[in-house]
Structure formats: structure tokens, C-alpha cells
Image 1 (cartoon, rainbow, N blue to C red):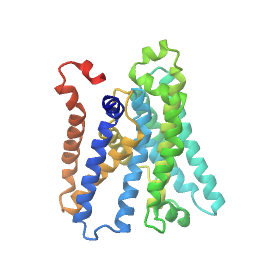
Image 2: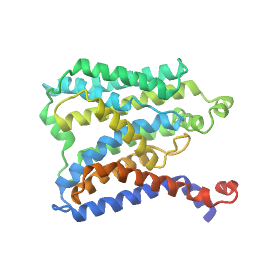
Image 3: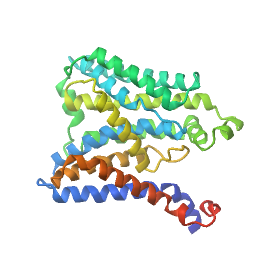
Length: 327
């Protein structure tokens, strides 16, 4: 019985390590913050973490298929620029704008999937090229930073409930429950894991490889567009910032790794990537409360990545026979 539970919990080992690290770092941050544990501090941290968490979720789905989407940051920026033009006016106009932004994310994901699946190009090269296209569209929409947003809608999305619970955390939970969980339990979700484990074996087993890959990139585009909406509500504007898009793309990959998802595909999940995103954001917060130079952040990020990957590989390094990993 004990071995059965060890076997069931083994895939979650990296997630537990990332969660423990996140809680420890956040506790240290709160203990050193001048305002202590307050609703404003919690809301600010939640908004920043949710922003990267959504982009990390977008990155997770292609990674599960042993791919990599280098365009998620640019879809994120494009959605931000588009939302800054559409999320203004009445409530009905804002709702239509939200749907248009989400549809744009789906279209971007569909283009990525079509280029990867139908064009049979390497995902890194394909999404690097489409990312440049999305940045060009963002520049066409927003040659200069600006825009207008429905303030009531933006304040609701970035605010807190009466009990002090940030809406951004509720949004994250909603996306996990309503988007990620149904996908994970669906045929397409199970196929994504099978493809990441072995695409050849999945194909020989009758798994719809092409369709599963295509849907993975479509879902990535949708999730990146949700992040773009949240960014617009936080900044009340849009900007075709290539550096921002590149930064979020790289940080999303780091969050995926910290959260326990293998870059070789086949294992992990969006929950771990969200936790990894909060770990990364808390590093910046710790630098702030300890009054350290922000230039140190890449160093701490590298240390956290090495520790996370090292702890996840410790069992493999100490085992004399790799078959022991499957007992």
C-alpha cells in the first residue's frame, strides 16, 4: 500500500518542492516588507504573479508535446495592444472587446499550430518566425504607447474581493478549473502527454498526433491572450514592447522548469508552472525588500533554476539502476 502511494505521488514531487520554495520565499518577503501582510501587498504580488502565471500556462501546453512556443510573449504583447484599443466605452463594448482579444489569441495559436503541424517545421523556428509577425502587428496597432480602458472593468479585474482575496488569483483558479483541467482530462490532453513521452509510440498506438499538437498551440495562444487582457487592465494602456515580450517568453520557460514540467515533454502540468511563476516574481520582491540592486535578479534566478532542476534529478543521480524509478 505504501509503495502504491509513493508511486502515485512521485510525479508530484517537483511540484511540492516548487510550492515549498514559493511559500518560504513569500513568507520571507512578507516578514521583511514594511507594510507586512496587508491586502494591498497581497494584491500587488498576486497581480504580478498571475500575469506571468498565465503566460507560463500558455508555454506549458506545447512543452508537454516536446515542443516550445517562442511566440507566447509576442501574442501577449499583441493582445495587450489590441485590448488597449477595444476595452473602452460601455460594458457591452468592453465585453465584445474581450471576446475579440481572445479570438485573436486563438487565431495566433492556430497559425502556430498550422505552421508546426502542416509545415512540419521545428516548433522553435516556426514560433520564432510567427512571433516576429505578431510583434509587427502590435507595432501597426500601437506605434506609440497609449490607449484607453474601461476603468470599472480594469479596477474589477485587478482589485480584490471584500475578504481581501485578489481577483487575479480567482482568475487563475478559474482558468485552471475551466480550461486546463478539462483539457488535461480530454483525449487531446492525454494525447499531448503521450506525444511528449514518445511521438513515434503515440502514432503507432493510434493517437491523433497532428490534431493534438495543433490544439496545444491553439490553447497556448488563448492563454497568452488572457494574460494580455490582464496586462491591459493593470497598465490602462498598450505598448508594442519587444523586450517585454521576450522577457515573458524566457521567464515562462523558466517557470515551466521550476514547476516540474520536463522540457523533453510528457510530464508536468500547468499548476506547477503557475507555482514556478510565483517563485520567479517573489525573487524580484525579495530584492526590493532587501534593497538590493535589481541587476542581481538574473543571478538569483539562475540559482533557483539550478536548485529546482537539481532536486528533481537527485533521485535519478543516486539510483544505481534506473529501473528502480518505476517501482
